[in-house]
Length: 260
Ligand SMILES: C[S@@+](CC[C@H](N)C(=O)[O-])C[C@H]1O[C@@H](n2cnc3c(N)ncnc32)[C@H](O)[C@@H]1O
Image (cartoon, rainbow, N blue to C red):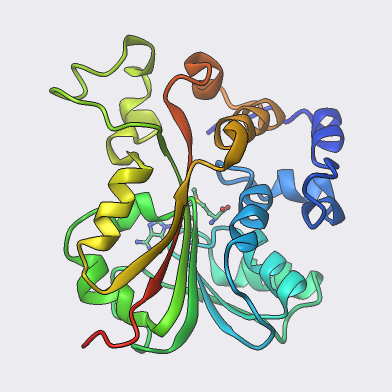
């Protein structure tokens, strides 16, 4: 997507002390690694409700340009398998080395839907702005994804979504102001927190520890702020004005005694 980043605004907003971890990173670096969302803001808030300890093995699934993987390694000392389909791992390896975390972050080219990883291998899985691309069908979670994390381990995801599911025949019955985004922003695979909760619970292999849109309208606000910083041509958050669009945060834990 064509963009015109506003670096002055980035420098102002990305130094927000409400995100003490994100504040440590160079605003231009974050803007340069944009893949559609304020990764570090969202990840910082996600990590606040997860248990991450040094030495844990974490899968960053759909890691994009690995900004989040680098953040996880630096902030929590975890080992990160930075797996992505579109971004070449060699490109991510350069970034990982520049960030000085080459002993902790391992970039991999992987299609999440292919059996690339060993079952029960990871202590946790994180998916930032990625699972709506490949994890919305009924089979992938119970038959494959849940099993990648050890029993008792956590899953943390953030996806763009809605406060409530839309009813009726979609996209026909979508609010008029959102219709133009149905294809271009992939609204057909966006869902509410309740939808994602049910989707994970249907596996019968996890407990849900948290699902929300971030406190105090933060899901919408971060969307809007990032849209202004990056200067996307599609001003979906601005047009929606807080009516429907937000980010969904969900943390699940694999049951201790789930059969594979
Ligand atoms: C919107 S980007 C988000 C990237 C990153 N997590 C971030 O927050 O900046 C979504 C990422 O999902 C990845 N993706 C989409 N389908 C995938 C698949 N089947 N397997 C692995 N990654 C996939 C894409 O390569 C892309 O980098």
